[in-house]
Image (cartoon, rainbow, N blue to C red; front, side):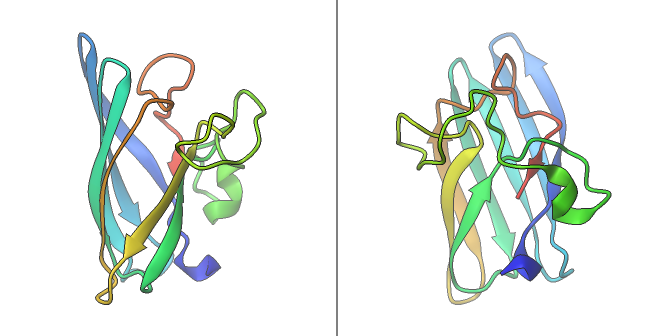
Length: 135
């Protein structure tokens, strides 16, 4: 499983009034694992869309980690982004890390198509994920 962990930093954000967008370029430790994910915040909801290819079939955890430091691989990204010291949970749970985004599902071809919304993460403010790693 660890060989398939994706470590990437959110590269940049573009801001317009109450709307922001961040793009993640994914590169796995295995060069056959790659993709792009867009985070688009309009007011208090962040839409998350994208595609990741090269995964094994099935569910894969999808989280924002504390740091965007990729110098030591996944080990240097820290734990899940959890500024309020809450317990791990699903995206719909009241008790969860800010960075808990649940699972993505890869099909038989190893492709995961991501389309979800989250009202806990932000691209501005105290739950800002800009500059953190997505694993």
